[in-house]
Picture 1 (cartoon, rainbow, N blue to C red):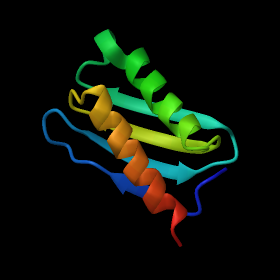
Picture 2: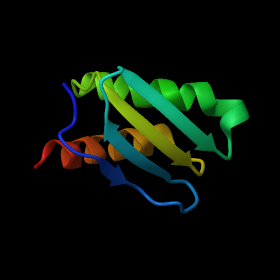
Picture 3: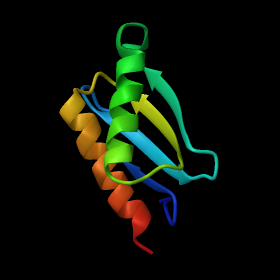
Amino acid sequence: MTLKKAAKCGTLESNDIFLMLTPSEDGIEIELESTVEKQFGEHIKEVIKAKLLELGIDSVLVQAQDKGALDYTIRARIEAAVARGLIL
């Protein structure tokens, strides 16, 4: 499934993540900027991808700006952005 429109969620505050999801035809692409990218970049991408697949989204461009968000925050932001992107 793909999104119907672009959607965003989150903030640039400490311990949060700002996400912009854009419909795509090229599978799941993740562009990540993070204050902890060296330590946790791959893990953050895995959490994002796993949540998208759990929600049935298999084609989207994700632009993420992370400020140290924990996994549950990342999953919640993905869920909210997907819900916004599926509504016309």
